[in-house]
Length: 331
Image (tube, rainbow, N blue to C red; front, side):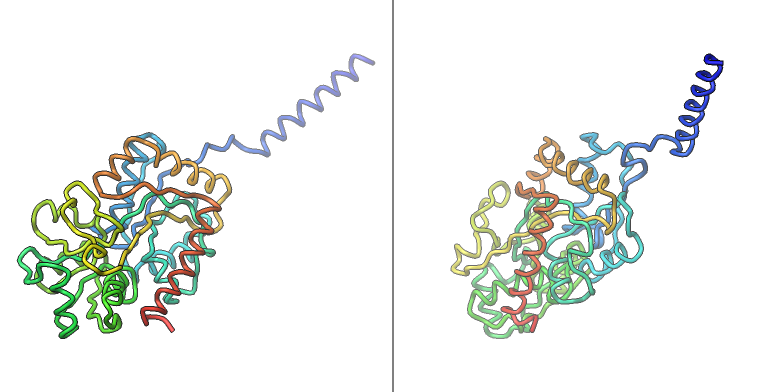
């Protein structure tokens, strides 16, 4: 009886273990277990597109992500279309990253969408860039002084192409220069486009007198001699193929525009997904592949992730609102 009783107890225990395993289902695959999508909130050719594709390439090349990575262009409203899509249709999707920069900050500050950075999952900033003021190689404007004199005489004669919506990042770059030169920034004749690539095409096609791109967007055209950079909006010269180009500060105009590049994720994603992306992008910025990317694009090293990045974004939005008020774009 004793032996029989012990065997029955063992059978009960074994049955309970089998039932528990069955209820738990198969072992969960390590994240990410499927393909990754990175959204560039602009058309091909601009800063968001470059950030997204460069990140996808380095993540794959360095084997930090072994799943396939696809980049989707989703232009509209300087990030408004993309963030609305992510919040309303992709909640909880941890297999998604979306490129961000101050351009999105201004979109949020101008209340073009009813969201803030608290409505998404901040992941990390991965680099910084700078603004620039450029014209065609055959432009009559040989220097920043020439362009400012033309603006002083008649602002309508100096149309400016940008890859963001009115009141957005590229508009603000040029407006900061005008304000620093002691003129009215609200009179800028700004021509918006869906991304930096389209804005540059407008300039090269003779449709606008100048453009206010990110430096990384125009390095190739500078090296090919297709554009003339009148001023870099950096604290000092950048070196390399841009070493002979003066800053606005050197030319007596105290205007800079420093531009962070980073990513956010959808709201409501798992802690596992959040931790994975914060850690993975943190590893990426330390790789040789990313260092080469920074050098090739004239980007500069800057990284912050997780809770620190979330605080940074909140502060950036507050600063963006203040700047837009100072420039007369926001009441």
